[in-house]
Image (cartoon, rainbow, N blue to C red; front, side):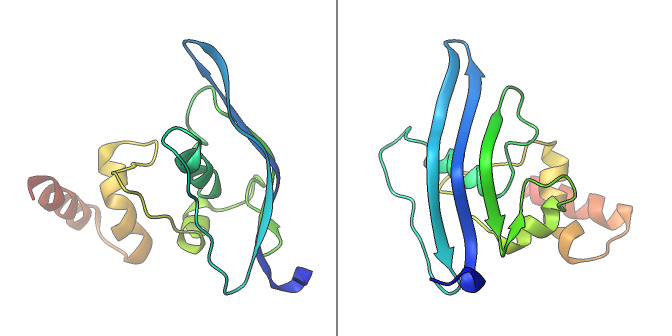
Length: 137
């Protein structure tokens, strides 16, 4: 696999978080790469860190208190944890499918409005109507 066609490269990824039981190590020293056009699956028993890892790819842990991510994740050669990364654009490039609802760490309104804001220019009134329709549905 040449460096030019590597789309995702994970190097020494580690994630810890604080719980009532103390510091929990959810991911330890994970490294792999995925070439352009390849698919990968994350398979394992309940509680082994699958969803936690996928949240790392979308930076959904950024606003969760007590979470610390170490290591590197490159998407097309760019460090997704660089301070200048637009997480909205990142999430458009690195999508994830969840078995259960997995909201971003923001308000319910912001979660529902996320798609329309990202893909269409809407006035605040129209956005409010869209969110209300979803909640009523």
